[in-house]
Length: 82
Image (tube, rainbow, N blue to C red; front, side, top):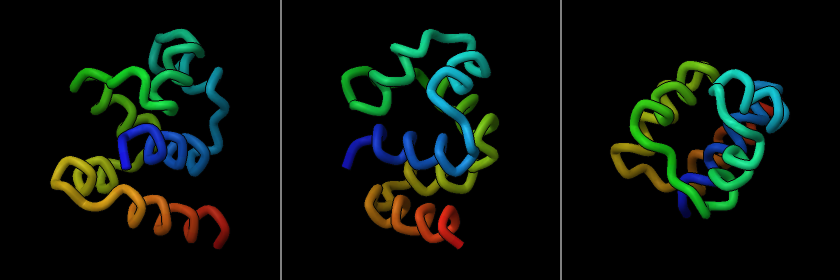
């Protein structure tokens, strides 16, 4: 799994639309869509800003350390639903 699915789950967990996330990251909504669809990869400063905006630094660290993206999304889904 690529970053896109994890990013989408983080954004949703934070309760943000693509447009709201774009404003917080000072980007276009199309950039957010491209990240979520794995057609564009965020640079490191953007990646770190995503962690701050979504208040999910631990997820980003887990992803950087190679934790399976599917496991991350399953955990996020449990948090969103519960």
